[in-house]
Image 1 (cartoon, rainbow, N blue to C red):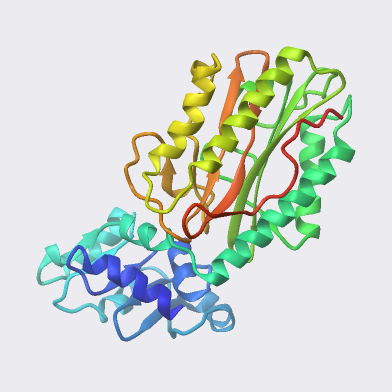
Image 2 (image 1 turned 180 degrees about the horizontal axis):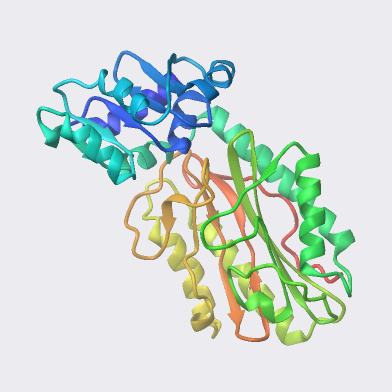
Length: 358
């Protein structure tokens, strides 16, 4: 946690701040190991977690390497935090106007409060050993769930029924589900024409022979997320479908081969996209190639063609090209990976990417 605080402060120093005031639960967890209501203040000397009474005992049990100050909720919590603010500039990830306004009104120099959530996200892009270990474990659970799918995907089973079984298995493996703004379900399970929606919602459609079934799983283990997708065939798959599947598979391989420390992140997207375009399906690849993973499902770096940021050691990202044929089917193959020295990577997911027809 001390190294994480230093990493965050290094980024805050770049914008002239030597103190951070943290409101978002993801960033509080990153700095303290506690996920819950509160506010964290960091500087070069210390980390202070301000915790309301109802969270105080849990914060004591779960947080690490920080001082804990018990407060009341609401305005009294903010009043306690303000006592730690001085004439120096500080950066905050706060998203609530009323809180920002209350703090700024009582500052001698209102410009001393800088709102820049990106600095915290930049710090989180580089993972430490403990974070890597947890993401790896999450990915291993996902691999188990893919194996589970090979027994459970059958003609007549619904998307909703499969999701329910996968959620049960997730919790049986000491993990939790997660979701994000683009979906209202923890998992994406899309059979047949529903697979043509990259962020399909779960339906009661039954799986049918000839379906491609997209299974996109994101889950959290001890706070950290892995994200992977496999596309299964059911019954009899046409030759054209198989050919398109193999285009996506080869595209993903091209993306993995493009991973190299110091290369522009956009080159990964370019490698995947050019192969699909050269194969005649460019207009059917309708999203970016991937994203960072960690405490959130989607976090920087963004694997898209215009991103000129450079890949760095210990970034954790997904590579997930896809082809989506409207009203017919979709295919996506995704792994969570770790960027290592040179052109080396660790692929957290080991479940086969060969086409499995169940």
